[in-house]
Image (tube, rainbow, N blue to C red; front, side, top):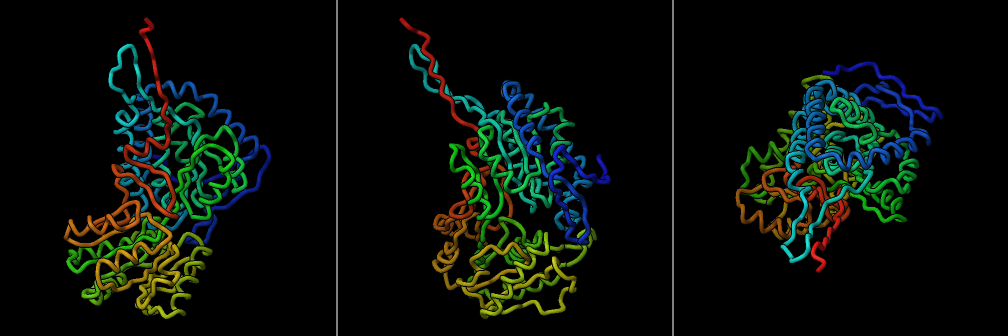
Amino acid sequence: MVALRPLTLRRNDMKEKQFKIVSPGSGEVFAERSYASDSDIREALTKAGRIAPDWKSTPLQDRISICEKAVKFFVENADAWGEEITRMMGRPIRYTPNEIKGSFQERARHMIDIAPEALVDVGLAQKEGFYRFIRREPLGTVLVLAPWNYPYLTSVNVIIPALLAGNRVILKHSEQTAICAERYLQAFQAAGLPEGVFQFLHLTHDQVAGLIHDPKIDYVAFTGSVDGGRAIQKAASDRFINAGLELGGKDPAYVCRDADWDYTIANVVDGVFFNSGQSCCAIERIYVEASVFDDFLNDFITLTKKYQLGDPLDANTTLGPMVRKSNALQAKSQLEKAISEGAQTNIPAGTFPELGLPYLAPQVLTNVSQTMDVMQEESFAPFIGIMPVKDDAEAIRLMNDSQYGLTASIWTLDMERAISIGSQVETGTWFMNRCDYLDPELAWTGVKNSGRGCTLSILGYEHITRPKSYHLKFDTR
Protein backbone atom coordinates (compact mmCIF):
# COMPACT_ATOMS: atom_id res chain seq x y z
CA MET A 1 0.00 0.00 0.00
CA VAL A 2 1.26 3.48 -0.88
CA ALA A 3 0.97 5.75 2.14
CA LEU A 4 0.20 9.44 2.04
CA ARG A 5 3.43 11.31 1.64
CA PRO A 6 4.53 14.95 1.40
CA LEU A 7 3.52 16.44 -1.92
CA THR A 8 6.10 18.43 -3.81
CA LEU A 9 5.72 21.09 -6.47
CA ARG A 10 6.18 19.73 -9.97
CA ARG A 11 8.24 22.20 -11.98
CA ASN A 12 8.79 22.32 -15.70
CA ASP A 13 11.22 23.91 -18.08
CA MET A 14 9.11 27.04 -18.64
CA LYS A 15 8.14 27.48 -14.97
CA GLU A 16 4.50 28.00 -15.85
CA LYS A 17 2.02 29.40 -13.35
CA GLN A 18 1.25 27.31 -10.33
CA PHE A 19 -2.07 26.43 -8.75
CA LYS A 20 -2.96 25.40 -5.22
CA ILE A 21 -5.27 22.69 -3.93
CA VAL A 22 -7.01 24.18 -0.89
CA SER A 23 -8.60 21.66 1.45
CA PRO A 24 -12.21 22.78 2.04
CA GLY A 25 -12.33 21.15 5.45
CA SER A 26 -9.51 23.20 6.94
CA GLY A 27 -8.85 25.97 4.43
CA GLU A 28 -5.20 24.93 4.31
CA VAL A 29 -3.15 24.40 1.17
CA PHE A 30 -2.94 20.65 0.69
CA ALA A 31 -0.70 20.67 -2.39
CA GLU A 32 0.70 22.85 -5.15
CA ARG A 33 1.26 22.00 -8.76
CA SER A 34 2.45 23.71 -11.94
CA TYR A 35 0.58 23.87 -15.21
CA ALA A 36 2.15 22.02 -18.12
CA SER A 37 4.41 23.99 -20.43
CA ASP A 38 4.00 24.05 -24.20
CA SER A 39 6.88 21.59 -24.47
CA ASP A 40 5.18 19.28 -21.94
CA ILE A 41 2.07 19.22 -24.13
CA ARG A 42 4.03 18.60 -27.33
CA GLU A 43 5.97 15.81 -25.67
CA ALA A 44 2.79 14.13 -24.42
CA LEU A 45 1.23 14.18 -27.88
CA THR A 46 4.44 12.90 -29.45
CA LYS A 47 4.67 10.03 -26.97
CA ALA A 48 1.06 9.07 -27.57
CA GLY A 49 1.58 9.05 -31.32
CA ARG A 50 4.82 7.09 -31.10
CA ILE A 51 3.31 4.27 -29.07
CA ALA A 52 0.12 4.08 -31.16
CA PRO A 53 1.06 1.19 -33.51
CA ASP A 54 2.46 -0.97 -30.71
CA TRP A 55 -0.50 -0.45 -28.39
CA LYS A 56 -3.05 -0.98 -31.14
CA SER A 57 -1.41 -4.30 -32.05
CA THR A 58 -1.15 -5.45 -28.42
CA PRO A 59 -3.46 -8.45 -27.97
CA LEU A 60 -6.66 -7.66 -26.12
CA GLN A 61 -5.89 -10.20 -23.40
CA ASP A 62 -2.64 -8.38 -22.66
CA ARG A 63 -4.48 -5.06 -22.39
CA ILE A 64 -7.01 -6.71 -20.10
CA SER A 65 -4.23 -8.05 -17.87
CA ILE A 66 -2.68 -4.60 -17.51
CA CYS A 67 -6.00 -2.97 -16.65
CA GLU A 68 -6.79 -5.69 -14.11
CA LYS A 69 -3.44 -5.08 -12.40
CA ALA A 70 -4.07 -1.34 -12.34
CA VAL A 71 -7.49 -1.80 -10.75
CA LYS A 72 -5.98 -4.12 -8.15
CA PHE A 73 -3.37 -1.45 -7.37
CA PHE A 74 -6.13 1.12 -6.91
CA VAL A 75 -8.01 -1.11 -4.46
CA GLU A 76 -4.85 -1.84 -2.48
CA ASN A 77 -4.35 1.90 -2.00
CA ALA A 78 -8.01 2.84 -1.52
CA ASP A 79 -7.68 3.95 2.10
CA ALA A 80 -4.75 6.29 1.49
CA TRP A 81 -6.11 7.63 -1.77
CA GLY A 82 -9.55 7.97 -0.22
CA GLU A 83 -8.08 10.21 2.45
CA GLU A 84 -6.58 12.32 -0.32
CA ILE A 85 -10.06 12.74 -1.83
CA THR A 86 -11.36 13.93 1.55
CA ARG A 87 -8.53 16.43 1.91
CA MET A 88 -8.92 17.69 -1.66
CA MET A 89 -12.71 18.06 -2.00
CA GLY A 90 -14.25 17.56 1.43
CA ARG A 91 -16.32 14.38 1.25
CA PRO A 92 -16.33 12.69 4.69
CA ILE A 93 -13.59 10.12 5.11
CA ARG A 94 -16.09 7.46 6.16
CA TYR A 95 -17.18 7.38 2.49
CA THR A 96 -14.19 8.25 0.29
CA PRO A 97 -12.26 4.95 0.29
CA ASN A 98 -15.41 3.23 -0.97
CA GLU A 99 -15.35 5.35 -4.12
CA ILE A 100 -12.45 3.12 -5.13
CA LYS A 101 -13.36 -0.12 -3.35
CA GLY A 102 -16.98 0.06 -4.48
CA SER A 103 -18.24 1.69 -7.66
CA PHE A 104 -14.83 2.42 -9.24
CA GLN A 105 -13.88 -1.24 -8.97
CA GLU A 106 -17.35 -2.39 -10.06
CA ARG A 107 -17.37 -0.24 -13.19
CA ALA A 108 -13.78 -1.01 -14.16
CA ARG A 109 -14.17 -4.76 -13.73
CA HIS A 110 -17.41 -4.85 -15.69
CA MET A 111 -15.94 -2.95 -18.63
CA ILE A 112 -12.95 -5.30 -18.53
CA ASP A 113 -15.20 -8.38 -18.41
CA ILE A 114 -17.27 -7.35 -21.43
CA ALA A 115 -14.37 -6.11 -23.57
CA PRO A 116 -13.97 -9.36 -25.57
CA GLU A 117 -17.65 -9.31 -26.51
CA ALA A 118 -17.77 -5.56 -27.12
CA LEU A 119 -14.65 -5.44 -29.32
CA VAL A 120 -15.06 -8.64 -31.32
CA ASP A 121 -15.32 -8.34 -35.10
CA VAL A 122 -18.86 -8.14 -36.45
CA GLY A 123 -19.31 -11.09 -38.79
CA LEU A 124 -21.69 -11.03 -41.73
CA ALA A 125 -23.59 -13.72 -43.57
CA GLN A 126 -21.48 -15.70 -46.03
CA LYS A 127 -21.39 -14.40 -49.58
CA GLU A 128 -19.85 -16.58 -52.25
CA GLY A 129 -16.37 -15.41 -53.18
CA PHE A 130 -16.16 -12.84 -50.39
CA TYR A 131 -15.00 -12.50 -46.82
CA ARG A 132 -16.60 -9.55 -45.07
CA PHE A 133 -16.55 -8.23 -41.52
CA ILE A 134 -16.61 -5.01 -39.52
CA ARG A 135 -13.80 -4.30 -37.08
CA ARG A 136 -13.98 -1.82 -34.20
CA GLU A 137 -10.88 0.33 -34.50
CA PRO A 138 -9.53 2.64 -31.78
CA LEU A 139 -10.14 6.33 -32.35
CA GLY A 140 -6.60 7.35 -31.45
CA THR A 141 -5.73 9.69 -28.59
CA VAL A 142 -8.60 10.33 -26.17
CA LEU A 143 -8.57 13.48 -24.02
CA VAL A 144 -10.44 12.91 -20.74
CA LEU A 145 -11.52 16.02 -18.82
CA ALA A 146 -12.55 14.87 -15.35
CA PRO A 147 -14.37 16.73 -12.52
CA TRP A 148 -13.70 16.94 -8.79
CA ASN A 149 -16.95 15.63 -7.29
CA TYR A 150 -16.28 11.93 -7.97
CA PRO A 151 -12.72 12.12 -9.25
CA TYR A 152 -12.21 8.40 -9.88
CA LEU A 153 -15.78 7.31 -10.67
CA THR A 154 -16.34 9.82 -13.45
CA SER A 155 -12.98 9.26 -15.10
CA VAL A 156 -12.93 5.46 -14.99
CA ASN A 157 -16.06 5.37 -17.17
CA VAL A 158 -13.89 6.33 -20.14
CA ILE A 159 -10.27 5.59 -19.22
CA ILE A 160 -10.47 1.82 -18.79
CA PRO A 161 -12.60 1.05 -21.88
CA ALA A 162 -10.63 3.53 -23.99
CA LEU A 163 -7.39 1.74 -23.19
CA LEU A 164 -8.93 -1.68 -23.70
CA ALA A 165 -10.14 -0.59 -27.14
CA GLY A 166 -6.56 0.29 -28.11
CA ASN A 167 -6.70 4.06 -27.64
CA ARG A 168 -4.15 6.21 -25.85
CA VAL A 169 -5.42 8.47 -23.06
CA ILE A 170 -4.39 11.92 -21.85
CA LEU A 171 -6.13 12.88 -18.60
CA LYS A 172 -6.67 16.44 -17.48
CA HIS A 173 -8.23 16.41 -14.03
CA SER A 174 -9.94 19.24 -12.18
CA GLU A 175 -7.39 21.40 -10.37
CA GLN A 176 -9.22 20.64 -7.11
CA THR A 177 -8.42 16.91 -7.43
CA ALA A 178 -5.38 17.08 -9.68
CA ILE A 179 -3.48 14.47 -7.68
CA CYS A 180 -5.98 11.83 -8.83
CA ALA A 181 -4.48 12.08 -12.32
CA GLU A 182 -1.07 11.33 -10.86
CA ARG A 183 -2.46 8.31 -9.01
CA TYR A 184 -3.82 6.92 -12.27
CA LEU A 185 -0.34 7.10 -13.78
CA GLN A 186 1.13 5.48 -10.69
CA ALA A 187 -1.33 2.58 -10.95
CA PHE A 188 -0.76 2.05 -14.68
CA GLN A 189 3.02 2.19 -14.24
CA ALA A 190 2.76 -0.46 -11.51
CA ALA A 191 0.64 -2.55 -13.91
CA GLY A 192 3.29 -2.38 -16.65
CA LEU A 193 1.46 -0.14 -19.13
CA PRO A 194 3.89 1.00 -21.84
CA GLU A 195 5.03 4.60 -21.57
CA GLY A 196 2.89 7.03 -23.55
CA VAL A 197 -0.30 4.97 -23.55
CA PHE A 198 -1.65 6.84 -20.51
CA GLN A 199 -0.47 10.33 -19.55
CA PHE A 200 -1.79 13.29 -17.57
CA LEU A 201 -1.37 17.03 -17.96
CA HIS A 202 -2.27 19.83 -15.56
CA LEU A 203 -3.75 22.46 -17.89
CA THR A 204 -5.42 25.86 -17.89
CA HIS A 205 -8.74 26.33 -19.69
CA ASP A 206 -6.96 28.03 -22.59
CA GLN A 207 -4.51 25.15 -22.84
CA VAL A 208 -7.41 22.68 -22.93
CA ALA A 209 -9.00 24.60 -25.79
CA GLY A 210 -5.69 24.61 -27.66
CA LEU A 211 -5.24 20.89 -27.11
CA ILE A 212 -8.71 20.13 -28.48
CA HIS A 213 -7.77 22.07 -31.63
CA ASP A 214 -4.68 19.89 -32.11
CA PRO A 215 -5.15 17.26 -34.85
CA LYS A 216 -3.41 14.70 -32.64
CA ILE A 217 -6.46 14.61 -30.34
CA ASP A 218 -9.13 12.28 -31.71
CA TYR A 219 -11.89 12.34 -29.07
CA VAL A 220 -12.84 14.37 -26.01
CA ALA A 221 -14.69 13.04 -22.97
CA PHE A 222 -15.90 15.79 -20.63
CA THR A 223 -17.85 15.71 -17.38
CA GLY A 224 -18.88 19.07 -15.96
CA SER A 225 -21.20 22.04 -16.31
CA VAL A 226 -23.39 23.02 -19.25
CA ASP A 227 -21.22 26.09 -19.82
CA GLY A 228 -18.15 23.87 -19.80
CA GLY A 229 -19.79 21.56 -22.32
CA ARG A 230 -20.53 24.49 -24.60
CA ALA A 231 -16.89 25.56 -24.37
CA ILE A 232 -15.72 22.06 -25.30
CA GLN A 233 -18.13 21.90 -28.22
CA LYS A 234 -16.99 25.32 -29.43
CA ALA A 235 -13.33 24.33 -29.20
CA ALA A 236 -14.00 21.19 -31.26
CA SER A 237 -16.33 22.87 -33.75
CA ASP A 238 -13.72 23.32 -36.48
CA ARG A 239 -12.69 19.67 -36.39
CA PHE A 240 -14.52 16.47 -37.30
CA ILE A 241 -14.13 14.80 -33.93
CA ASN A 242 -16.74 13.78 -31.41
CA ALA A 243 -17.05 14.88 -27.82
CA GLY A 244 -18.84 12.95 -25.11
CA LEU A 245 -20.49 15.48 -22.79
CA GLU A 246 -21.94 14.53 -19.38
CA LEU A 247 -23.27 17.82 -18.06
CA GLY A 248 -25.23 17.13 -14.91
CA GLY A 249 -28.90 17.48 -14.11
CA LYS A 250 -31.79 18.65 -11.98
CA ASP A 251 -32.95 15.15 -11.24
CA PRO A 252 -36.51 14.68 -9.92
CA ALA A 253 -37.95 12.05 -7.60
CA TYR A 254 -41.65 11.16 -7.55
CA VAL A 255 -42.84 9.58 -4.28
CA CYS A 256 -46.11 7.66 -4.56
CA ARG A 257 -48.53 6.78 -1.80
CA ASP A 258 -47.78 3.05 -2.17
CA ALA A 259 -44.03 3.46 -1.65
CA ASP A 260 -42.14 1.19 0.76
CA TRP A 261 -42.11 3.96 3.33
CA ASP A 262 -39.05 3.61 5.56
CA TYR A 263 -36.92 2.39 2.67
CA THR A 264 -38.01 5.31 0.52
CA ILE A 265 -37.34 7.94 3.18
CA ALA A 266 -33.86 6.60 3.87
CA ASN A 267 -32.87 6.38 0.22
CA VAL A 268 -34.38 9.65 -0.95
CA VAL A 269 -32.74 11.57 1.90
CA ASP A 270 -29.41 9.95 1.05
CA GLY A 271 -29.96 10.71 -2.64
CA VAL A 272 -30.35 14.38 -1.78
CA PHE A 273 -27.57 14.93 0.75
CA PHE A 274 -24.80 12.46 -0.03
CA ASN A 275 -21.58 14.28 -0.97
CA SER A 276 -23.30 17.49 0.22
CA GLY A 277 -25.59 17.23 -2.80
CA GLN A 278 -22.60 17.60 -5.13
CA SER A 279 -23.53 14.73 -7.43
CA CYS A 280 -24.51 14.95 -11.09
CA CYS A 281 -27.34 12.48 -10.46
CA ALA A 282 -28.31 13.64 -6.97
CA ILE A 283 -32.02 14.14 -6.32
CA GLU A 284 -32.54 17.89 -6.73
CA ARG A 285 -36.34 18.21 -6.61
CA ILE A 286 -39.05 16.02 -5.09
CA TYR A 287 -42.72 15.60 -6.01
CA VAL A 288 -44.95 13.72 -3.57
CA GLU A 289 -48.51 12.47 -3.99
CA ALA A 290 -50.61 14.93 -2.04
CA SER A 291 -52.28 12.31 0.18
CA VAL A 292 -48.92 11.39 1.79
CA PHE A 293 -47.14 14.73 1.46
CA ASP A 294 -47.33 15.71 5.14
CA ASP A 295 -46.15 12.31 6.34
CA PHE A 296 -43.29 12.30 3.84
CA LEU A 297 -42.19 15.80 4.81
CA ASN A 298 -42.24 15.03 8.53
CA ASP A 299 -40.17 11.84 8.14
CA PHE A 300 -37.81 13.45 5.65
CA ILE A 301 -37.08 16.33 8.06
CA THR A 302 -36.64 13.95 11.01
CA LEU A 303 -33.97 11.95 9.18
CA THR A 304 -32.26 15.06 7.80
CA LYS A 305 -31.73 16.36 11.33
CA LYS A 306 -29.72 13.23 12.16
CA TYR A 307 -26.86 14.21 9.85
CA GLN A 308 -23.56 15.16 11.48
CA LEU A 309 -22.14 18.30 9.87
CA GLY A 310 -18.44 18.70 10.57
CA ASP A 311 -14.80 18.04 9.84
CA PRO A 312 -14.64 15.56 6.94
CA LEU A 313 -11.63 13.85 8.52
CA ASP A 314 -13.75 12.93 11.55
CA ALA A 315 -15.10 9.39 11.12
CA ASN A 316 -18.41 10.45 12.72
CA THR A 317 -19.09 13.17 10.15
CA THR A 318 -21.78 12.36 7.58
CA LEU A 319 -22.01 15.79 5.94
CA GLY A 320 -18.85 17.68 5.09
CA PRO A 321 -18.15 21.08 3.55
CA MET A 322 -18.88 22.03 -0.03
CA VAL A 323 -15.85 21.92 -2.28
CA ARG A 324 -15.09 25.65 -2.32
CA LYS A 325 -16.29 28.81 -0.62
CA SER A 326 -17.30 30.20 -4.03
CA ASN A 327 -19.53 27.17 -4.66
CA ALA A 328 -21.11 27.52 -1.23
CA LEU A 329 -21.76 31.23 -1.82
CA GLN A 330 -23.46 30.50 -5.13
CA ALA A 331 -25.63 27.80 -3.54
CA LYS A 332 -26.48 30.04 -0.59
CA SER A 333 -27.55 32.76 -3.02
CA GLN A 334 -29.97 30.37 -4.75
CA LEU A 335 -31.34 29.28 -1.38
CA GLU A 336 -31.85 32.85 -0.16
CA LYS A 337 -33.54 33.82 -3.42
CA ALA A 338 -36.04 30.98 -3.02
CA ILE A 339 -36.81 32.10 0.53
CA SER A 340 -37.30 35.70 -0.62
CA GLU A 341 -39.79 34.40 -3.20
CA GLY A 342 -41.86 32.63 -0.58
CA ALA A 343 -40.22 29.25 -0.01
CA GLN A 344 -40.51 28.02 3.56
CA THR A 345 -37.55 26.54 5.45
CA ASN A 346 -38.12 23.49 7.62
CA ILE A 347 -34.77 23.08 9.37
CA PRO A 348 -34.59 25.73 12.13
CA ALA A 349 -31.45 27.79 12.65
CA GLY A 350 -29.28 26.21 15.32
CA THR A 351 -30.11 22.64 14.35
CA PHE A 352 -26.62 22.30 12.93
CA PRO A 353 -23.39 23.98 14.09
CA GLU A 354 -22.39 27.28 12.47
CA LEU A 355 -19.05 26.40 10.91
CA GLY A 356 -18.84 29.09 8.25
CA LEU A 357 -18.49 28.63 4.50
CA PRO A 358 -17.80 26.37 2.69
CA TYR A 359 -19.79 24.41 5.29
CA LEU A 360 -23.48 24.63 4.49
CA ALA A 361 -26.14 23.10 6.74
CA PRO A 362 -28.85 21.00 5.05
CA GLN A 363 -32.17 22.65 4.36
CA VAL A 364 -35.60 21.43 3.28
CA LEU A 365 -37.86 23.85 1.39
CA THR A 366 -41.62 23.71 0.98
CA ASN A 367 -44.08 26.17 -0.54
CA VAL A 368 -41.83 26.19 -3.59
CA SER A 369 -43.05 26.79 -7.12
CA GLN A 370 -41.83 25.21 -10.33
CA THR A 371 -40.66 28.59 -11.62
CA MET A 372 -38.15 29.13 -8.81
CA ASP A 373 -34.47 28.65 -9.62
CA VAL A 374 -34.27 26.11 -6.81
CA MET A 375 -36.60 23.89 -8.87
CA GLN A 376 -35.11 24.72 -12.27
CA GLU A 377 -31.38 25.40 -11.99
CA GLU A 378 -28.79 22.91 -10.77
CA SER A 379 -28.09 23.48 -7.06
CA PHE A 380 -25.26 21.02 -6.39
CA ALA A 381 -25.76 21.71 -2.70
CA PRO A 382 -27.32 20.18 0.45
CA PHE A 383 -30.84 21.55 0.15
CA ILE A 384 -34.01 20.43 -1.60
CA GLY A 385 -37.40 21.71 -2.71
CA ILE A 386 -40.41 19.44 -2.14
CA MET A 387 -43.84 19.87 -3.77
CA PRO A 388 -47.14 17.96 -3.54
CA VAL A 389 -48.77 16.75 -6.78
CA LYS A 390 -52.33 15.62 -7.29
CA ASP A 391 -51.69 12.76 -9.74
CA ASP A 392 -49.29 11.04 -12.12
CA ALA A 393 -50.05 13.44 -14.96
CA GLU A 394 -48.97 16.44 -12.90
CA ALA A 395 -45.85 14.62 -11.71
CA ILE A 396 -44.87 13.77 -15.30
CA ARG A 397 -45.44 17.35 -16.45
CA LEU A 398 -43.31 18.78 -13.67
CA MET A 399 -40.53 16.22 -14.03
CA ASN A 400 -40.29 17.08 -17.73
CA ASP A 401 -40.35 20.82 -17.03
CA SER A 402 -36.56 21.10 -17.02
CA GLN A 403 -33.66 21.85 -19.32
CA TYR A 404 -31.99 18.71 -17.97
CA GLY A 405 -32.59 14.99 -18.37
CA LEU A 406 -29.95 12.86 -16.70
CA THR A 407 -31.85 10.65 -14.24
CA ALA A 408 -35.28 10.57 -12.63
CA SER A 409 -36.79 8.21 -10.07
CA ILE A 410 -40.15 6.90 -8.94
CA TRP A 411 -40.83 5.35 -5.55
CA THR A 412 -43.67 2.85 -5.75
CA LEU A 413 -44.35 -0.88 -5.52
CA ASP A 414 -46.24 -0.89 -8.81
CA MET A 415 -43.90 -2.01 -11.60
CA GLU A 416 -46.40 -1.40 -14.41
CA ARG A 417 -47.04 2.12 -13.15
CA ALA A 418 -43.31 2.76 -13.00
CA ILE A 419 -42.74 1.58 -16.55
CA SER A 420 -45.72 3.51 -17.89
CA ILE A 421 -44.62 6.76 -16.26
CA GLY A 422 -40.98 6.13 -17.19
CA SER A 423 -41.89 5.92 -20.86
CA GLN A 424 -43.21 9.48 -20.62
CA VAL A 425 -40.36 11.07 -18.66
CA GLU A 426 -37.54 12.70 -20.63
CA THR A 427 -34.43 11.26 -19.03
CA GLY A 428 -31.33 9.17 -19.71
CA THR A 429 -31.93 6.80 -16.79
CA TRP A 430 -35.27 6.00 -15.16
CA PHE A 431 -35.08 4.49 -11.68
CA MET A 432 -37.68 2.65 -9.63
CA ASN A 433 -36.92 2.58 -5.90
CA ARG A 434 -33.34 3.64 -6.52
CA CYS A 435 -31.38 6.82 -7.27
CA ASP A 436 -27.90 8.28 -7.52
CA TYR A 437 -26.29 5.08 -8.80
CA LEU A 438 -24.74 3.99 -12.09
CA ASP A 439 -25.23 0.36 -13.03
CA PRO A 440 -22.23 -0.39 -15.31
CA GLU A 441 -24.31 -2.86 -17.31
CA LEU A 442 -26.62 -0.01 -18.35
CA ALA A 443 -25.82 2.89 -20.66
CA TRP A 444 -24.93 6.11 -18.85
CA THR A 445 -26.35 8.91 -20.96
CA GLY A 446 -28.48 12.03 -20.81
CA VAL A 447 -30.90 14.08 -22.88
CA LYS A 448 -31.48 17.80 -23.35
CA ASN A 449 -28.84 19.89 -21.54
CA SER A 450 -27.57 16.87 -19.64
CA GLY A 451 -25.33 16.26 -22.62
CA ARG A 452 -24.74 13.69 -25.30
CA GLY A 453 -22.86 10.47 -25.83
CA CYS A 454 -22.74 7.33 -23.73
CA THR A 455 -20.39 5.59 -21.33
CA LEU A 456 -20.55 2.22 -19.56
CA SER A 457 -22.35 -0.89 -20.80
CA ILE A 458 -21.51 -2.57 -24.08
CA LEU A 459 -22.83 0.54 -25.85
CA GLY A 460 -20.12 2.65 -24.23
CA TYR A 461 -17.51 0.96 -26.42
CA GLU A 462 -19.24 2.26 -29.55
CA HIS A 463 -18.30 5.84 -28.65
CA ILE A 464 -14.57 5.19 -28.23
CA THR A 465 -14.15 3.11 -31.38
CA ARG A 466 -14.97 3.57 -35.05
CA PRO A 467 -16.20 0.93 -37.49
CA LYS A 468 -13.87 -0.22 -40.24
CA SER A 469 -15.32 -2.44 -42.96
CA TYR A 470 -13.32 -5.28 -44.53
CA HIS A 471 -14.65 -6.24 -47.97
CA LEU A 472 -12.40 -8.98 -49.28
CA LYS A 473 -12.98 -10.71 -52.60
CA PHE A 474 -10.93 -13.89 -52.76
CA ASP A 475 -12.52 -15.54 -55.81
CA THR A 476 -11.61 -13.49 -58.88
CA ARG A 477 -12.64 -16.03 -61.50
